[in-house]
Length: 304
Image (cartoon, rainbow, N blue to C red; front, top):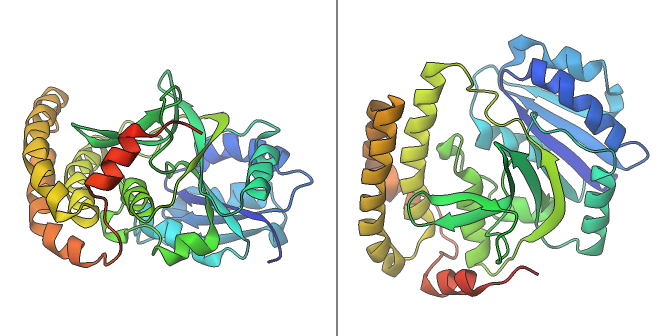
């Protein structure tokens, strides 16, 4: 392949943020075989102009889609345009230290077959990849956790490009929030482990929905729905039998939180839609599923 690494970024109302972060990406990529693909789901806000002002035409691909098919579909489309051996999924609200891409490139060279979870610093915490949680099913994994990550977080994830394609990429029906956990469960069930990289990147977090009550409600809907769809798609039937009552109790706790946030109605719509869509979502994945053996192996695991 022509290059080693492609940075894949999905944009949505991201022009102001990208104007801050992209210069740090360009500096970090200096002298390295790194390309860029941008899937822009809100092309009217000027991201293309920001990109063109900072990158040479032959170094990036820009894919606008005003229909906004979602983060998952945007990632899949952008990875499909990559011509390199690896892709680095990176949110537009993440800053790169000058040595970040050199360290990621070194990790890819050292172990080219393993997905890499790159750390993110946000909301006062430091996180590397995805972890299990008995209430929310999946959460950001603390950088100090004793066991390794279940899989990479979509905000800062390195995948061998062929591996991403082989597993069908992200499940596009999820739209956003949870698509990385869905892929993480599927990868883990198939015996593929994720390496955590000792690198934590500054991450603003939530720029695309900040200050918009309608989008906050849409996010609450998607999180409630997608939590159920991820379990339905990726869990074995024996684990589902145990998980269903746990998820029921968890959703009661989550409902109380949504009441305080004024987001109970979209949350309940999401639960209902998740129950309706669950059977179809399960049929759409035919590969290995995450069961008790995977669960026990993960809970016993220790960070490499």
